[in-house]
Image 1 (cartoon, rainbow, N blue to C red):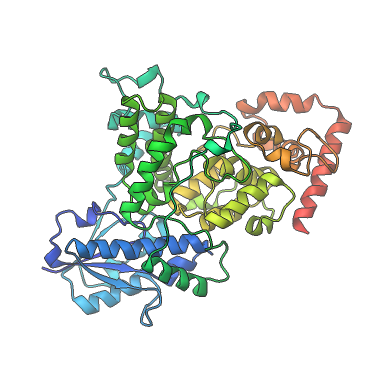
Image 2 (cartoon, rainbow, N blue to C red):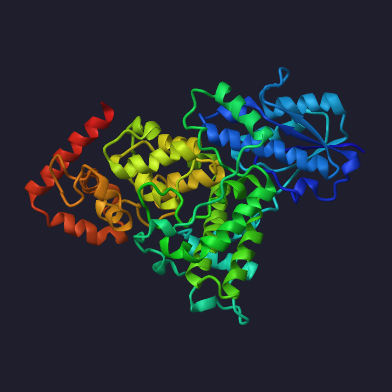
Length: 510
């Protein structure tokens, strides 16, 4: 009995559910580089190169382990350009008795795969992705009947399920579930002590992919000049070990910090490898826990890192599949302003935005605070269309797949879901940015000025955002004190803020 097993670009794992019980001698593994996936949005050049190179290396690894791999390259003249088209061609080539696949991570691909049963005269076995801690059914059970789906309570259940950072009595190590209050230190004044991630020199396979991407996707955003991603599982594991040894201990303290010219700080740079399958999320968390138990990293670092993976990462996936495709259309604040052009070139006088966007275009990477409190915060307070913001994040980050990016953007960053994820909008003035970075000291705007042409745009837009959205946000309990402060302001002061904000927003359109 011959089995065809399609493997997608974010399923680069040897423990994939589609391979469970499979006999290498009776299976054909189908891997496909298709135009449909590289162009449904204008992905960052480095993102495309990373995924294609990782796919080609994974195919070579599978062959070395005895699997037969039918690999279709993007520049194959017979390439149909779609998953469905390539499965149809593979059926003609191999005449399989059945197709076994692991479910994809995105609605649009799942819809296509669910249609295979009607298109092909071959039985289809579509299996749940077992690489996550929480199943779809478990998340739905947890969410059922809850008025608010707060991540913190979900995270505690995942800690209990995995037994990570629990003592012998099943209680959280250190007496608390969450040590986030200890993880908000401003950046230290010691740039020479900041660890740098490993850099992987492109091999022959990667160089071939880089040439292909440079020619075929010349009009896509981003640069290939700084390409340094691991594209093999062994190299991804080396990056994991490097982070755990050199950066994890101070990750907790400085995970919210930002510094000019320092894109990585103490962050792991592992999310691209986790999300495409080169790394095992639970095994990574267990390694982090082991370092805590050996006394080599403090509890706030271990807990903060583990929370990002078995807490937030699993949580947003659950939200994505539970809410369905309609979630992508939500716009609770009715924000409609077009995305400014500087999101693609970083050409803005706002130093914080120029830094976050500049490194994004160079590395297809920015850490979570740069995404949430710089580029996301600006889009929120400026009233940018959240669907345009969603598309931008999906395009420009190497770790961005819709299941993880969409809830983070529409829900957490842009409050477009009306508070399903976040209890209040993550909006702030320039004060937060000044506290957590050195950006403001390099900016032509004055973070201490509240009005006028030199005032930090975040100061103007923050209060203007609250003012224009008061009909929706005015009853939010977490914003009650902020709105009381706004109501006490002099009418002339309010008018000046509104006028200055309007003038600044007009420049975005021009």
